[in-house]
Length: 335
Image 1: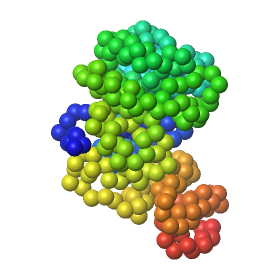
Image 2: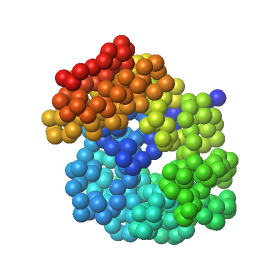
Image 3: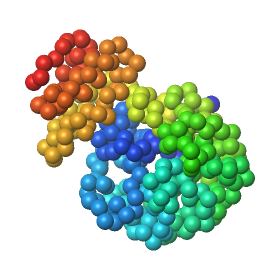
Image 4: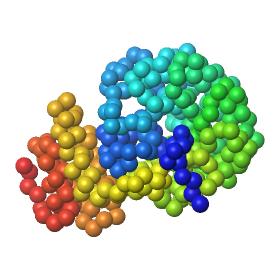
């Protein structure tokens, strides 16, 4: 039987931090499908927070909570300061990225390459924990390059856990730091779910979350037999309607499942508000393109929301027109 988490402090489901995807607009959109799933920001580097436009980087709507801030960096003192800023900004969790394999991230000595330096990761975690009262967590791979044995994984987790980290989100693929692109690193290294299951057996006191290749509700429920939580990555963007039933099926809330049309209607006030704040319509609508994936006439929805002429001359009503196009196949003219 799937675990029931309704009264538990463990959040059993989350949406992965994804660059150019999990910004505030996408998170607000997901909140129209699920109230309880833990959401993450895109990875934000410590240097960007310390020296960049903080409101642009960190602002979010209260409706997005619970929401976690993912940081990239390798300097314990700077990460601690950023964690403090994130807590003050209202984030519910601070997460350290130890999983991204991109060349840009490696050049800054953070992301997946930090798996080769567990002592440094432990120092970063310890410094951040001393700075904040919210949970400090780590997202990482099962290994990198030739440091990919289960023993290597245990070594990493043990050292970081001894520094106080209690929740580990484990992407069940290794990362090749040379020779594979970030996209290829999400698909080519084989999934090793059993390693993550064994990690939970060997560290029952820790909260172990599994990530990688999970696209269906049945898979989520199956993984929850073995670990504490499941993180969904690209499937959340490619098939967001997957989350329409999770409050009922995972969180055991007595709630209905919104229709796609309901979700469109719920987005209208938000779109109007954000346009008043100066955001562009396409910054929001680009995240909604996959809402009707797998449904009849989904191309009419996508086509309408992608039309540059309509985007340049429309407001929230464009979502309603796109819905009409999906339902009736009407050919729309610029408004």
